[in-house]
Length: 159
Image (tube, rainbow, N blue to C red; front, side, top):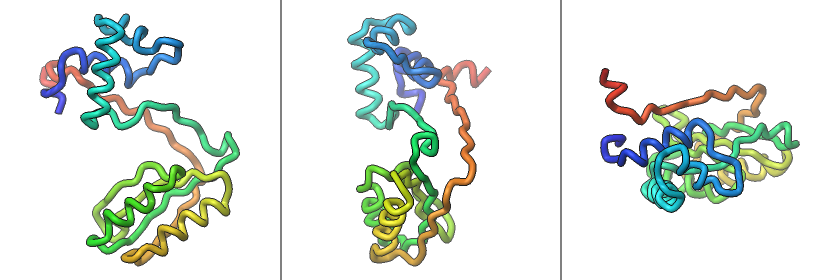
């Protein structure tokens, strides 16, 4: 995928992965660090978003510090109903990281809710979908945050 990105897009992705500027003019700030104009930076980021290279730009918060509860849901769903059940789960704004996996439990997602009751209601709504054989809501006991950085400089990787 990185072969189809422009040099500017690669520079912007490198910068955004490290730290998205939190200021009144983030695209102006991005432009200064990547050698382009504010408008070029904004246009390039929008293009990356529209193409799916960037799925989300936003803050990450520790739910428990804000008074929320969270759980990782492991769902065993009939493969013929997977997309339908995933769409149901994704219809809740409290659901994040909805993805398919190989194995008996083939749909996984995170629920971050205001309280245990809301979390339970969302899990039950998904559990009641046609094709769901089992759903386990695994409460978060400890949070581990990993920092991932994708090197956009292909030549550096090949060296």
